Image 1 (cartoon, rainbow, N blue to C red):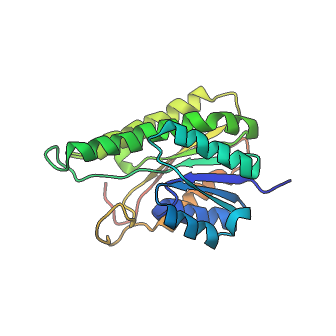
Image 2 (image 1 turned 60 degrees about the vertical axis):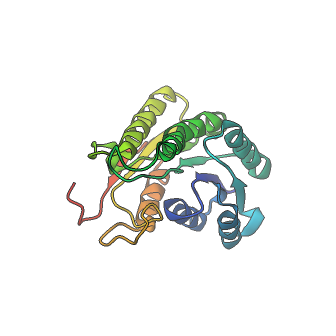
Length: 228
C-alpha cells in the first residue's frame, strides 16, 4: 500500500513545520498548506520534493482555496489520511488593543478557517477513515483577560467536539491539540521556559499513532513553568 498522506494547514513555520518534519520521519507523504509560498516550497524540498511533499498555497479564509487544496492532494497522492487544521494567529490582550481589521482577520482565520478545513476535508477523510486534528490552545479552556484570541480558541475547542459528534459512525477520529506557551512566530520576541514546536509535534504524532479504535479527543500540553 502507498504511504499515508498527512495534510497540514499553517505548515510554513512553527508547529505546522515541526509536525511536517515528524510526520515525514514517520513515513507520511505530506500536503503542506499556507499563504507563505516561499517557505512552503523550501520545506517541501527539504522533505523529499514533489514525490513526498506537495506545497499548496492556501488562504484558509477562502473556502474555494481549501477545496482546491484537498483536490490537489487527491490528484497528487490519491487519498488524504490525516488533516491537521493548524492555521491561526493571535493578538495582544485588551479590547482597546489591536485594530478592528486585525481582529476580523484573526476571527476569520482561527474560527472560520478551521471550520472550512473540516468541511472541505470530510469527504476525503470519510473515504480513508482518517483522522482530523485541530489546533486549539490552553486559552481555549479558560478565558484570558481581554483576549479575543482566547474566544477564538474556545470556538475551536467546541468545534472539535462538535465535529467528533457529527462524524460519529464514520470511523474518523478527531483530536483537539491544546498547547500552552510555545516558542513560535506567534510571539514577536523569543520566549523563555516555553515549549518548542517539536514538543507539540510529538503530541500530534502520539494521537495519530494510536490503534484505529482509539480516539484521543484532547491533548492539553503546558510547559512545566506555566502555572495556569
